[in-house]
Figure 1 (cartoon, rainbow over the protein chains, first blue to last red):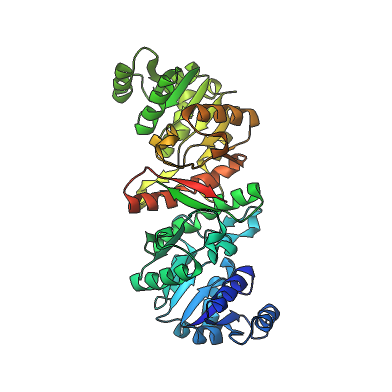
Figure 2 (figure 1 turned 180 degrees about the horizontal axis):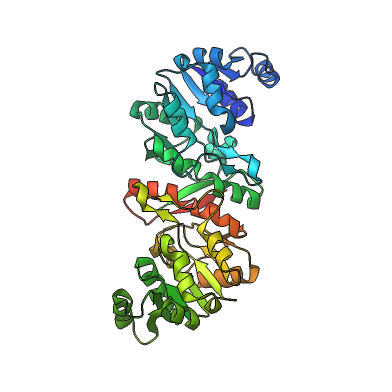
Length: 216
Length: 216
């Protein structure tokens, strides 16, 4: 499958590399086609990897993964152009982290709104699925790093898009019962609200290699 | 120990009853000494149970448990009188749930503030410890209902108060390693922010008999 990954940070690189390992063609999108981190990733990743500006990357991808910083997400998709994401599944990994008010960061959208909703609102023809945003990227693509079962949440308005995302997550190693559909895109408020406790635990435990398991 | 429980709902009653079972004297506090639910609870609970208006109850308690609705918490403690909670440990179980904007409820304090902080701010001589607010009350007092280990969070400014709370939680059946200190009272922002995902899962799973386990 042709997949576009927005974002050249550790999340984007981790996802991009995993997708290549799984046999996908991956184009990493950023503001400019000459982004140095993107070019370096392509160089070490081989012929199935490429890079391009957001618009070019979005046009290439049959599926778009958003791994940009939350503060830059909406602008990135505007640069991409709504016509290049229309009808496509967007897996939104981002969080609306606000680093301007000290550490740990607060959220610039929360409680009665979310970044997932804002993205869906701004691009109504895209099929946004909020997923994987509640953990360290190493676990997103390799859930079996942890010694026992744990959970990831999924929120979105499009049932078929969620099935697509579920399939991709299973190819990462997630078991079907570990992928919890928490509702429509307004449930992104809930999954993004996991960040405050995640950040406190990260501060306490000094590692991101943990996740939450729903015990019942 | 003489313990006062603010609130006559299911959380207050569950806590009160558990504390009686553990041999404590419990006074349930409410707006009026003639609260019918409190009187009914006393009647069925025996001689170690009593009830009184918030001020009388707070005066009685060596330790105060806040199980009021979030919307009534600050007012309840004002009615109790700051002099009756000064120096005492307050275990704050409440959540700032706002039911006015539809279901699931949103939070009337969140992100850069919390109800735990508001309570500590308003009553600086009280020793507020936010704890147990991230789960159904049946699990608060009987964590072993679930088939495996799970976690509860604790936030507060007073280390000795946290030790007191940790001891009480252990008497409920919590293992020391299941009680996670996430920092000072500002970390109540994080534990109260667990509610949105808890509420979505509750809506999906149709049971409150679940909790989160930190897997690492």
